[in-house]
Image (cartoon, rainbow, N blue to C red):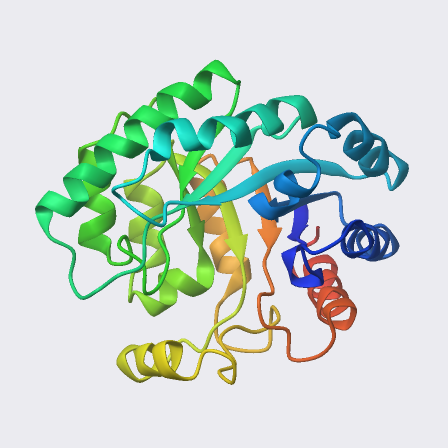
Length: 271
């Protein structure tokens, strides 16, 4: 397994944002990185320039993070340009997030989402990209039964999962049960810490009403998730992919947060 980092925290507005992030990643000894589709928009038509920049910093671009925001849009064809970017830049993973949640999703909504994911996943294979659905708090696919529904109504050959440690805790899902159930279908892992005794409904209200002021996630080892156990469980399932730290809301600067996470990964996880 390789340790990586998400770099959207540094910004998506300019090339300098990316250069700063990659420079920090290189200093701290990360091996790979993931970024949002905004970066693909920024470098559209300049993929070779992007590749040279990544090579200059000695890193590997592994995954692009995409969203389905509107189920009525043509999400299949709309994804094509991002799959083309992945193919031209060597990213073998596309993580994808379901639309925002408005209460418990209906079976009809989940079925429509599953059909869309299946189509995108099949198309992704044509670009040598693996599609991974990211179950996410306050999004359509959040709870275990919603994950199970999508899993049952999509082809495992085309739709994998990106599981996130903090979002798993917020959904009240047991890591061991989840990893065992989806053994062989885990395509990517996000690591971030979260209070394991969190009141999920209180958290939901803060997420909705206090987004800009709410400390949502934390550096590894600073809250309650047992990351050595998470790593052990993943190894038990045969997972040997990327472990990518995502520090959406660092408690300090982006660099210092990434440094704390890197030191923890070395000292505690041996990575």
